[in-house]
Amino acid sequence: MLHPSKLPHNTTIFSKMTALANQQGAINLAQGFPNFLSSEKLMELVNGYMHKGMNQYAPMAGVMALRERISEKYEGIYGVKYDVETEITVTAGGTQAIYTAIAALVHAGDEVILFEPAYDCYAPAVVLHGGIVVPVTLKSPDFKIDWETVKQKITSRTRLIMINTPHNPSGTVLNADDLHYLEKLTEGTDIIIISDEVYEHIIFDGQQHESILRYPNLVERSLVIYSFGKTYHNTGWKLGYVLAPEKLMQEFRSIHQYLVFSVNTPMQYALADFMEDKSEYESIYSFYQQKRDLFLQALNKSRFTFTPASGTYFQLLDYSKINDKKDMEFADELTIKFKVASIPLSPFYSTPTDHKVLRFCFAKTDETIIKAAEILCGI
Image (cartoon, rainbow, N blue to C red; front, side, top):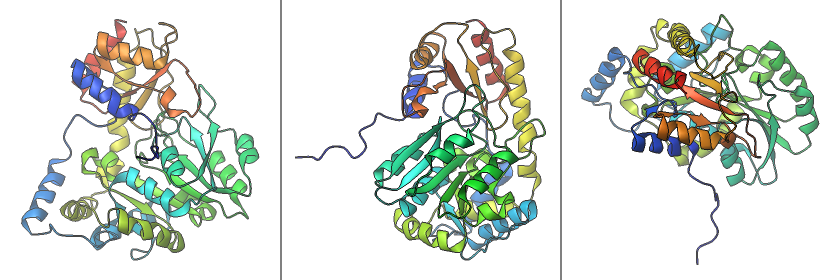
């Protein structure tokens, strides 16, 4: 007889809404991926390395040339030096990095503080490894952290605090005060931080990305997670990386080596070359701000209300002036009746929460953005 499921949950909301969008022939603004090509130069580099024979296993930690470019990048931006041998690991995307970090660090009974709405891969990984999820709800509608609440949630069993900035799904960002509070709360403790910064370059309106890497006292206790897919418009390549002090990275690699061992070799060589041109990631914010602004301008005559996203390529739209349906129900209706797919926010909470808000992805061609907005304006 089979044992009960270790994770008795439904399919992720992303799979559900994308499947519904495909079934209904709807414009898919649900799952977060671009519908335009990655750089032609980058794709040619991958093809070139395939033909050069770089098609076998890469080193477990990643191709050295790529780790060197990563180290140089963050030393240049933040002045923090990560050792290419012991403190950088290339992963099969951000999600694998997050899962591996949790698997490496969480023991049965450990408490993990995370902020809701939380990206949906966080909590299941904690539960699978015997940890206890301690949710802190971000204050709607601005989705800010109440650090006094966080302070009250910390106990002797707190093992991890997980942060995400720019934040998916809300599109908000942490500021310097937030990181200073985090410094104070963790000072003198053994608490480890997992910082999900996969949207690091997608931040708008002249704001600065407040990375963990700006704060030396946080760097020493943190695993920081990044994604090539988000930066270079190729989420299907599933390539990311982790930065961490040597002792934490040893723990991470102890699991990584058995989970995936190593990841796509020719793509790593290609990315190492491509990263030499800093403008390719330094200009991403303006590229996506144009798309955010186009989407919001096109929605001016709609009945949806919104606060412009501060980061990521997601925009929350409040539909409370349209109807009072539950967000899951209205997301289904939008997809089936109006042919525009979105993501409801309620699945990102551990307890029933419905702000009458849906998340829309604007990492699309301008034509797609305008077409979707025209439909939404007609509701």
